[in-house]
Image 1 (cartoon, helix red, strand yellow):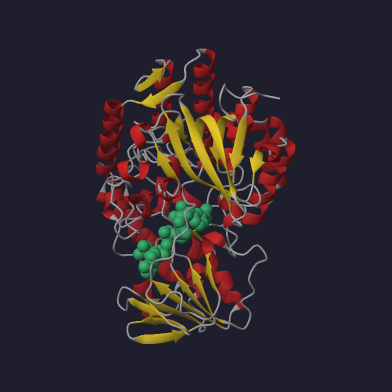
Image 2: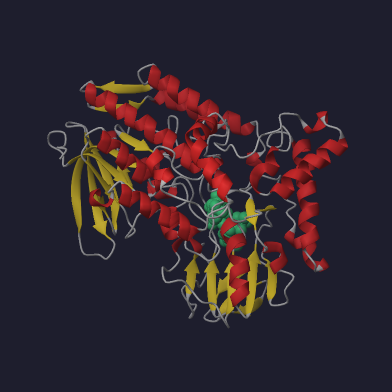
Length: 542
Ligand code: NAP
């Protein structure tokens, strides 16, 4: 059994047992490190443990949304659909946990409340709290790794009277494990992002009446989900490893479609139309790769957006809803696109009602329902599909204090500051997996997770071998990286929407583009160069 560095309980404490924490644990065990994972849920899975709402499904294709680090793992697993539903992904994660015997090093039903860096011995003191309130623990470790996920701090807006409602309320990001049966009920759903778009058709298939409160109409693309064919499953097993190498060289970590490099302006109108139509009918995010410049050039974006609106409109049978359901206030792709299975069609049913809360803002929640635009909508249950304090919320919910007691939350008050999304100056030996400032949510998360976990593992191996006690991002390198992320973002259309990428969904949160939009491929080269130059831009402390 591994023994920890002198004076510590563990070499490494990892916060979170989702895809990132699970793989990080496995890799560090391989280095002979003594590791403990702390997880708030009572099982592994992270996002897929919490988001059990009806219709929850991945928007990256199953054959790419899986670990590629172990041939044994992939050979023993068979995906059933093009886009996996939440229960299947959670089963996969449990299969991996069984296979690698991960659970013995994970403390479940426990939250990390604080992490404090002690300069004299270069150790982190990590305090935990059992979620049932039955106490906690204090651990010392050399390294603390935040594997807390980008979309895990679920958020219900501060609606006036929100505790007055007498019926049950649910947040899509914290759905009851036993499921919810809406049969015969009147349901109010607030929010029409990916979680709303996925859950509303299923809720409407059960409920007597559904009132959807929409603030922003979103672009939805057809998912075209279907069962996988035996031959594509067999082929994917042969090529997974090679495919992952290709994914690491692709801007979004996805290989199932190719980006057309030609700008819209360079294409004949009929070719342009055909490219858009073919990709629309293929389903999924391929649509955004129809031609170059969609995310950087308004004109190219307009072509794609107009086409998407025309196809979306064809699904809406009530003329009075067309304008309301079609997005008109932001370029396509700058808010996360939603993959759609019967979403727009659901509004063709008479028992589904759409309330535009931009026209008629939600004023309050009452004992019986939701008041918007001066009218009370009585409901038996409320579903909040209102999203997350994205990218930073789960990290800053832990009280993290670095050198000289500096608080990470205060340091990040005007937007997250990291070097490469991996570390932050003043916080030695603290790593983020897919942290703000890295490509993360703009990519296939599994590819980004494997990329970061491999990098952190090599880094810890180098420090351990060299008897180096600490690694810390240099402030100048960090400032340069933050400026670079902002500069690249300013060359794109992303800042033109009130999105969670910008922190715009949280009142009072500083608006700054948080993920790195330069592409996973270029980013991968950068972090490899940094490691190759003995962690240039980081200070290594003896
Ligand atoms: P979201 O995209 O942030 O959507 C939240 C929704 O709630 C938006 O429609 C938002 O309106 C609305 N809302 C928030 N505050 C409101 C308020 N005070 N009043 C009225 N409406 C309000 O959250 P999400 O749907 O949970 O998705 C978050 C991300 O998780 C996705 O973008 C995606 O990356 C990921 N996700 C992925 C999948 C998948 O793989 N298929 C599924 C679910 C989620 P505004 O747009 O006006 O802010």
